[in-house]
Image 1 (cartoon, rainbow, N blue to C red):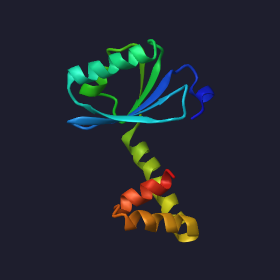
Image 2: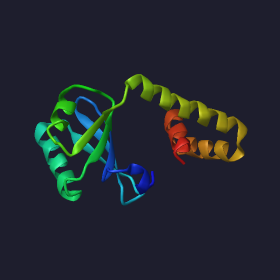
Image 3: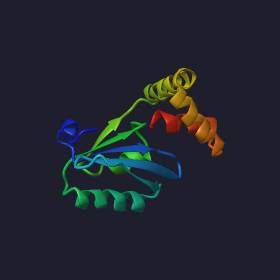
Length: 138
């Protein structure tokens, strides 16, 4: 994502939530390098992470995309005015993921390079899903 396409946001965050931990991917507007971390599902850990973002980005708005519209994580994040939450419908997200898998599977059967890369990943003991994911984001 180019900095100009991020508009008013200092960064974009994607959160893959779970009961005990949350996987986070952050893309600052000033960089094309993604950053990732794991956040423990505890109020104090969430607060510390959010305050770190506030300090790092000077309180400028940050877009946060997550796969739910309500629940403890959403309620915790709503406390921070600089975090702009964008709930994504889980069904829509699942269809988006499926599109990547179908595209990658077709690429393997029609493209020598894609098939070689997939086989290389599998030879490194990557699961079928992990190899597809690696190819999709190559």
